Image 1: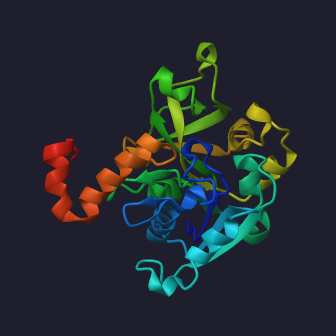
Image 2: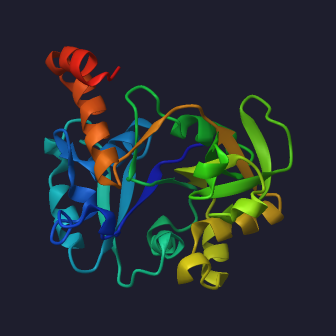
Image 3: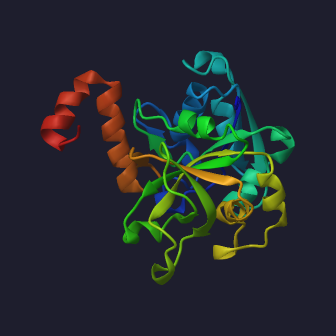
Length: 270
């Protein structure tokens, strides 16, 4: 199946990154030599996206839009169309994705959370797209510790792994430690069929009083329309100060060979 459109939520105000994000959108915080959201758009382009929909904040989203004006000047993005959609109220990740419905229409789409950057050469979207050939939505999952999975979304497997893919019967956002449904947690990469919008539109606010994307995934699982593709690749979390620092070191050592020796010898990074 061909998936040629990506939705990239970028409306978060980055409270964990204050004061850096008092004026600058979190999505534009620099990681080595480009803003975090550019890594997400580049990843979408590598997976075959011809169009990227960026969901932006009402107040400062125009700055994100401005960065991507004249993409012919951004290597690797010359052939991808980028447009922004404003999320006028911060009602949650699920609501942000729902804002893309009018543009996406009836097409399957990738969804990329820009806080998590894939390591060079370790893309996972193509695997998710391949697993969606039967018309299912597919989420990227990873086996996690109980301490970590309570901060993520956990899935409810209904089959064994076959070639790295399993059927999923539901999902729980940030499960209580006493009620973890499995140790398979959701990472920020998805391929959704357009039916996800119907489930998002019908949702009541969930955990945190927000429209949770995980709750819509749970509805897909209940009707047998959700699969999980497992990865053991590490994502680089740039949504907190320590993660941003580490990602800058890891990616810097890859993008600038002269920095690699310093990273290995003085910082212990491979």
